[in-house]
Image (cartoon, rainbow over all chains, first blue to last red; front, side, top):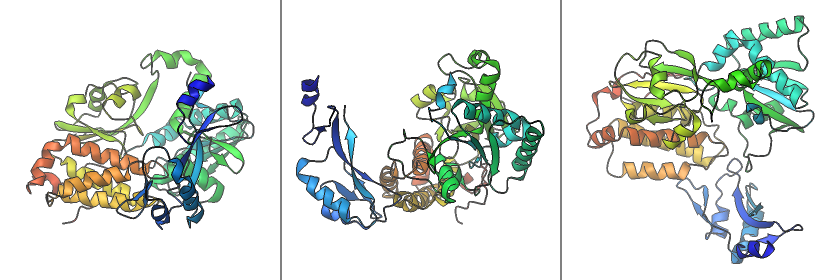
Length: 90
Length: 361
């Protein structure tokens, strides 16, 4: 079962203690967000802006190379609206 | 049975009776509470007993005099008869559309802030302080009370096998008899609408309320139940069916609804606070026949931009309504787009709003 699961792993999925796979996903709390736009400056690969300057998250998994920048975007968000969450895949 | 809705909440939970009825076109909560308040309160008591709750909180908007009087009277009767097992209290959140959204209600009870809360995982139960909150609307609790009293048999005997029971629907629009009716789930939309006796040929039904969808005559035979409605892109929503007569302008009415919903945004999330007014502006221009070639693509882009991007689902309801209007009134849209709006866009609205909603000019 573990090997089958491994076949579906995205580059970022890491099994936890009991073997469940987790993916990192960007979550933006729209209530907290005030359109500072730092996330889109730091991480334009994943974050676009709508016509009012609020972030739009692009579809798809977060690429491995972008994790460091995503963490920085989370740290630098003035409203703490930008978070990285682990989401179960299997 | 339906009691599966009473999530396993654990000890010390609070049952919240949601009688906020923020939807202007709905009056089923008012009817339930003025006709059979004990049924709803019994349902809340039963649910609280079932899941170890020790508080029942009844939420009625500040200023709904008739409902408040009915609930107060019922509570006094219950206390006098020593009938109540779990403490019941009556509270008055602000009378706003969004105040009845379940996380807004829990938020108000906890912190007196009547605004929705962003919940990335809707599976996690709402909390008030540290205690789990079970927020249910009055109608659900009335059904629970009936099932508790008579068992699931009578409930199952009505409606459809896969979606049993009855439900309350508020009818209004171009009709003689607006009001609340109880129908079996699965009754065709048109059969329900006919009970309100339309006064003119009906060009579309607004199903599900102001965050619902317009349904064209081709789908009037659709059974009123969640799965068949979903196949035509609609939902039962808040249990409202508004009949739009052929002499009304569907685009103008939709623009009014969009304007109303924009004004009812809690203003917390950018896409909703800025997006809904922009969408209402675009639709108003279309309805007035002032559109240019760029207007419709811009409106569609904005609908796409706003959908799913609020903390709650208020903006999604507005988007669904406007999208369905663009589809169902497509021929009107073409005429209005050529700068030839129908003569009826200035006609007074058949919809109910708590304040006048103008389209300018």
